[in-house]
Structures are given as C-alpha cells and as structure tokens.
Amino acid sequence: MEITYENDVMTAYLKGEIDHHSAAPIRSEIDGKAESLRPKILRLDFSGVKFMDSSGIGLIMGRYRQISLLGGSLEVVNIPKSLDRIISLSGVCSLGVVK
Image (cartoon, rainbow, N blue to C red; front, side):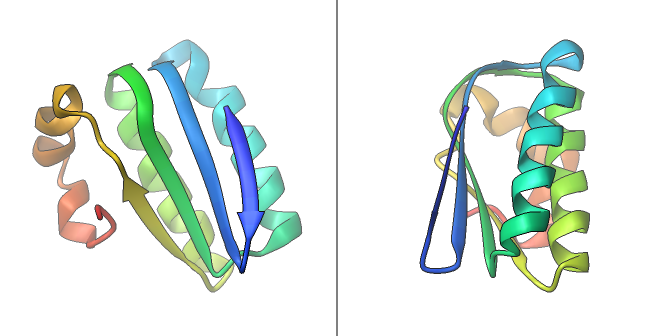
C-alpha cells in the first residue's frame, strides 16, 4: 500500500487482497497517518485490489467512523467491477462515500 498526502487529501492506494489477515495492518497504517496528518478527505483507492471479503467492508466502515471523528470525510474510489457486488450488498453506497 502507498499513502500520499496533498492539499488536505490523504490517499491510500490499496493493492492485492483485502481479507482477515491483511486488513489489520492496512487499518493500522491508515489510522496512524490520518491521526497525525488530520486530512479533510481520506480517499481509499481500490484500483489495485483483486479480492476483498467482509474484512474490506469493515475496513471501509471503520475508516468512515475514524475520519468523521477527526472532522473529515471519506471517499472510496476506483472500485474494480469484481468488487461491485460486495460493495453494493454491504450498504456502503448508502453512506455517500463511493465516488
């Protein structure tokens, strides 16, 4: 994963698979950076994600809560077609964060 910060936007470029084993270190790195940088927008870029289970949904929901507590907003971008179904069934779209 790569994280960039520019103009109050922190972008996490997620890669590979997001499952039970990989979600915790991803979550920890994003949270640490967000707490120190306090971005206005936290953008999760899923363009490099090949597989995601419910742990990925938890990752999104948790970052939504965390960035909201810090006074910012979340954007979920570049979702591959292969993840459309899990994203739509999860209800994440109802949060208005999917761009």
